Amino acid sequence: MGHHGGVARVNIKINERKIAQLGTPAGPVGKWVRSKVRETTMVARIEAPSRTGRLRNSIGDYYLGGNRYAIRTKVPYARYVYFGTAPHEIVPRRPGGYLRFFWEKAGAVVYRKRVWHPGITKPNNFLERAVDKVFGPYFR
Image (cartoon, rainbow, N blue to C red; front, side, top):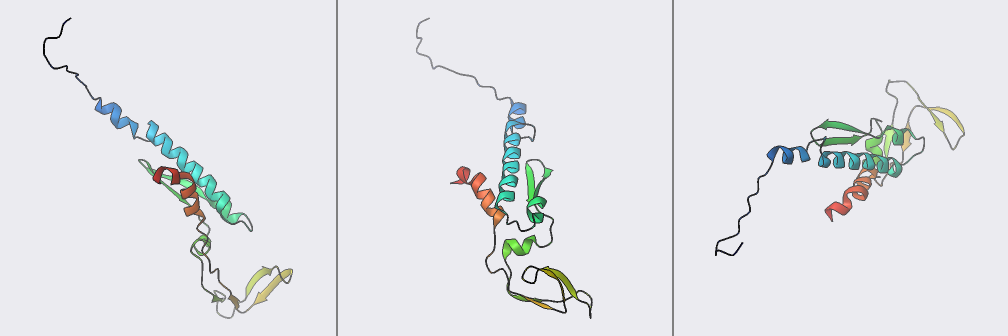
């Protein structure tokens, strides 16, 4: 075939259904997102402080729909570890009651009307570190 002075043409047909499937939770993008969420959850468990293991063991990921997930913990004190606290007084929930806790320094269970918590002045952003370790290379 010779050249007839015409312009070469290429017809491209986009399969919109296939393109749409790429980003679904079952598609390759969705599977990649899920794998990175699971990896972030594992790294967050490693990064979290562990005195009793309760905080670490409570970290989990939850599917929210589409390609949206949440990584969270359900222990009530997690926010204080994560954001830090200022020094503060701790009093019993019930007026006239006592606080009961194991005091490592005394080596025993103690009862007190009130205690002064020295605060956790430095926040421990374990989840932020986990996200940075897993997703950082994709956003730098």
